[in-house]
Length: 268
Image (cartoon, one colour):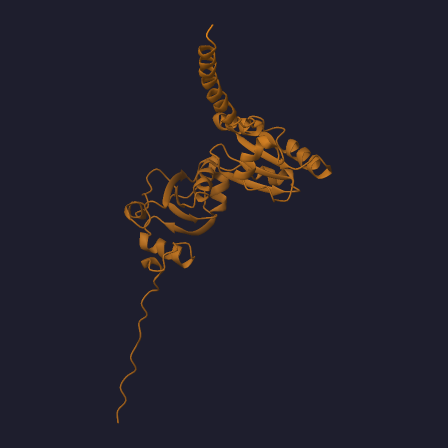
């Protein structure tokens, strides 16, 4: 065999192998799978709540909180699941970053509704009663999700099927200043699933009229209005509460013009 041809073939083969090896070495490692995220994803598909318990280590405090959590959800397996998240686990860093809990007091429980809305946050100690409050009504779930996305929420509470819809809704939806910042949701005052929210809004479940409540981030009730309240009336309440927007030139921030009475001219 000709030595030169053997060297050429060997170098050519090496040229093929080396780049392939280099590419394999530079390929990023697959991050470890998150068991908590898998539980969260499945709960969302099943329409269940997820209670994420973040902890640094197993100690008396974390064990006590875990025991309380298990007790609170013992009879709610059809409604909720538990996922434990050790904040130092490399596989769980995406969740730790998402909920910004790396420096939070531990242990901590975050309750998440099926739509992803955060409905409760409890640090270090918690009671079964407080955990029970994390279960909210369908309308509350929708409102909290949007409030956490920095949206305004108009909640229409219908007293009866014949009650008129609030006149302000269409005006808000067509106003360039509000249309991308406001969402609306309707509910019936007599709906048993909404009893908790109806009570919080201080509305009689037997009412025959329509009420509208305006909510602003992070969870402020701006006011409760009747069906004939105008958009400008509701917007004025929003501005008064300092929740309209950050634009100092916004017309809704402008105070109402003051009327002055000129004193009568004095006779000389």
